[in-house]
Image 1 (cartoon, rainbow, N blue to C red):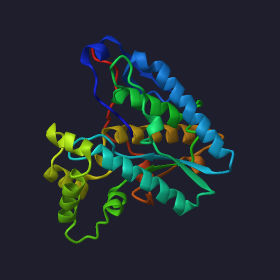
Image 2 (cartoon, rainbow, N blue to C red):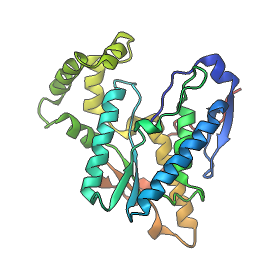
Image 3 (tube, rainbow, N blue to C red):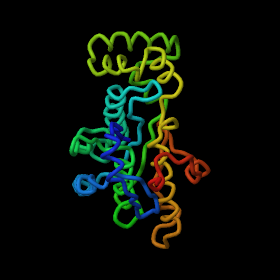
Image 4 (cartoon, rainbow, N blue to C red):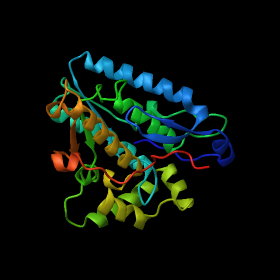
Length: 263
């Protein structure tokens, strides 16, 4: 899930407002971004419709993105593209299409020197995921990225994985200016990077992905209760390459960004 968090505090606070979605999820957002969010929702619905018209099954990919806790934005965006390609290859490029939320055309614009925050992005993605009927009708499956997806990107083999990650960091640092700036700001270090990608690289440790999991759970609750859909027409949910059990899929997780603005 794409979420940038470089707010200008005064501007963000002045424009803050609570926005709720069809499945009942509310977020504290910057009102200045309402127009941009509406445009992105319309853009992705049109993109989905184009792929659906080709007879493809439509998937959404949930993935950690922000530079936080040892995670690095640049790597995560590259992993996302690789995972998208792998999923589409697994099911067949003529049969499946995956919406990659880290693609650059998903970025909300900077307005008056203020970047969109996590609430703004989660409002956008929740509206896209739930669809106009709040039944997730635009999608067939959701894929939550897990440890093996990241391991595949780094070429981890189960032998000296942490050493390999540390070496990868050092090599990338020499040629990635954004990573170097993140290190200089204290946002990431070699040790934090190594530990994150060896031990925590998964949607399980993503704030935004927690919200997305709960959104899909709410959508499937509504589908089960809908007489035209029911249990057999729930959205398929996959984590780390495998389908999750009904016990997992029907369980909520801790909320991430959900919540009204605090006054």
